[in-house]
Picture 1 (cartoon, rainbow, N blue to C red):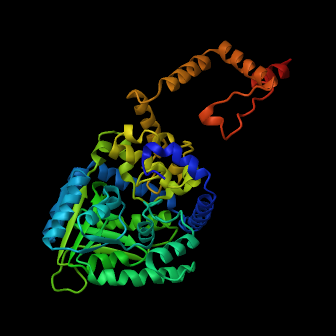
Picture 2 (cartoon, rainbow, N blue to C red):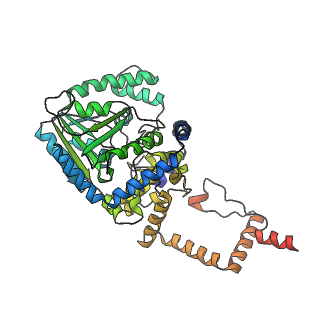
Picture 3 (cartoon, rainbow, N blue to C red):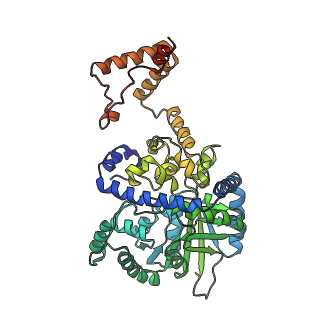
Amino acid sequence: MNYIPSKFRNNAVKALLNVNLRKNLTRAISHTLSKRVEVVSELPDWENLRQKAHEIKKHTIENLAYYLDLFEERATKNGVKIFRAKDSIEAKNYVLQIARKINARLCVKSKSMVTEEIGLREFLEENGIETVETDLGEFIVQLAGEMPSHITAPAMHKSRDEIGKLFSEKLGVKFTNEPEKLTNIAREFLRHKFLNADLGISGANFLIAETGSIVIVENEGNAGLSTTIPKVHIAITGIEKVIPRLSDLTVFFKILGRSATAQRFTSYVSIINSPKKNKPDSPEEIYVILLDNGRTNLLKSERLKQALYCIKCGACMLTCPVYQRVGGHTYGSIYPGPIGSVLTPAQLGLRDALLLPFASSLCGKCFEICPVKIEIHHLLLQLRAQAVDLGFASWLEKLIFKLWFIVMRNYKLYTSASKFLRYLLKLGIKPKVKSWSKERIFPELAPKSFKEIWRNQKT
């Protein structure tokens, strides 16, 4: 499968024909969604929490420059080194600079979508630094040579049989498909990496402007090991991850676990304030890279900047009827699904991610499930409008919609067109639209229109 957004249409066809993929997705998604309903229903104030989270993120994004400056000031005072990277090249080069300064040979990396976004692991390996993903799902897709298929469940597309075969081939162990044994195999392999790593890299779920703190939530304990055992810790995160106060975490902790993994609370929370020398559980140096990489492009739009409210829970993907059927790899983007179809055009440019805003039914389920109430379906509509305004739509598509617009505005034309279509169907002639009806039957028109039935009722 081509990991390129422009290949969405071809990738979708292949994914729809992949029986195992559909089976794996259905099993994983249905289980998570049903469990999520259970844990969300335990909170009678869930809608109030969503609104509160929305207001906190909206306020922060409206005042992003102020809170980033405040975070940098407080974190610097704590002894943390801050670097602002405008794009992936600046971010990767800064990491490499640090790695070479400490003569790093082995890097352990906890789960981070931002590092996936900039291709950091591949970059470090190209420069002779062994880099190991320590999150189990990320470790699996690294062994498979794939990209994550979901934000919080990177290996959602794989069955345990497939993972067992992968471990057997790549790690030289006896085949097993038992989750506990597979986890133990990964744990044993990674333990040696943790103990010998020179550099630890993580993302950040939140940055606290008030205290200059880095907040990481996880379920496996690997982030804690990645950020404390190596002497140097680098946290790479998007500029939108800052929130004003430490007390704001009480809202986000309630909604994040329930939305991301259908848990009441994640297993581990790390709040990192400063490096502490000569302490066994803290690195000697901490760096934070604040990455832009297209995020300020969203800030320029009054509506699209809503996408920066995202806390990367991945719930919108699970509820999306398109994602449910084709999976994450089809999008060819690190951020798949509905929110990814907004974020990816901001990073790559709308031309290179043109198909993604159209890869949606606009049903609005993404908004209904979003814990920070992002109106994703409206954002996708705006990107579609931008695509047309910029001239990215084909002449045929423009012609079709122009004709449709003329017909729909003229009662006589609309009535005549309807009668003509019914006449064709009576003759057994069904319209064929190559790219639409190849795998589907063109919908039947009712024998009579509503107005005809209404007219007959009145007489």
